[in-house]
Length: 534
View 1 (cartoon, one colour):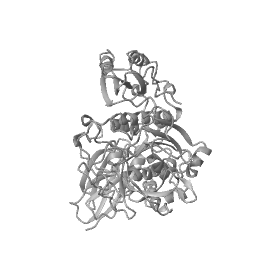
View 2: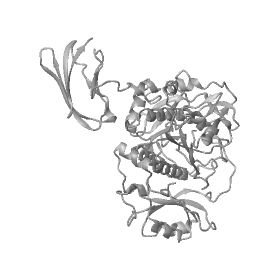
View 3: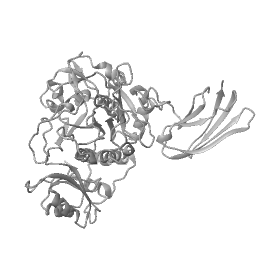
View 4: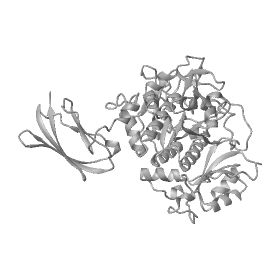
């Protein structure tokens, strides 16, 4: 199920011939030999903003970021296949051709694999009748949309002056009918904040003709009228159509990857993807629960690559909670992706919202926002409401964008950490709500202390004594605890990073009384007086 239920970096190569083509295939190359590109000259294939983001994230450009070998592409075209989009990260091209030609391509010496990704032709223009794969939108509701923003502190974020100014947001969806005409979105065009549009499904720039699910999703972020206000209505937007509502094939995951690579190369800060996959029209493409490891699915691999490059990715968890699958869809299974579950306005888990854990035992979803009765703008411009994690995801994307604006020098890992650790059940996450409902103010003030690290709680009445670091970038630390008589009663040496920050130490065996804890890192030493109470 999908949708819950200029840079030449992505090369758009238009077909020479459209005759005799039957299916779509992804052709993977063995290498990037004899590439004209160099890691020492990244402006050849990345924007300056993308490079700056990587510098902040300490993630250097690599061969994986190089465009594919143009000689290989030309030789694939010489077989008669129509070649469309190339992928830097997966080192290959999407082609449309018949089976015999696909077999011939597979025999080329530089080709590693030819994968059938969709049956039939699609990439030569022409519109097909749609079939609905989306959440149902209900009749008109109240024009007050502030409650869904208030639940995660977006009202406080906006009041503090953060509306998404200067933040680039990419939206992956199935179409944006009405966005280019409705008054609620006109400021985006008048102020030049629609940065790019592309329809990867039909290989055209038009994203305004196929469906209105993206319209609903975008409104939660960018809507701006007297009766409705999105959470980041001042942000810049890249609108990509990656979802084909007429069929369900793995090509849509490759479309997701193409869009993510474009977003990366352009320097996008945040991706919102209200999409998810587990089964397809061709059962041979289906995923099993064992594949739900954040590493197997094509879209999951692409999402992980985007996260590593510093993009904050918000993805709907899925609407499978009431179905046998019940688990999150891909790419919500990825570590570091903000898998967004749904709650109602009182914070209660929505039964349809997909749950965890992942196949490798990680908690999912990550966080939650309103997905039951979420107020949205329809393609006709009316104020309506809808149910689904498709609508909780853009709310979390608003939060991520606001924190990126407020904390421009923070890594995406830190912002992800702040969001999850500000959740209502951050200390006891589960596989229904994850870390719970996050909050802007809580996330922003999480490190509201002056030293390099802090011990808490103090006094201690719980099992764990925690140490939280402001910048946990893989440094070692030593903790030694002494009782009031000066006797050493605890010692621990470990390495801290974002994934294990704060670090919890079990002191359940300590008797009530006074203790002294000395914490030492390569750059600081601090001794703290602790009181243990029953």
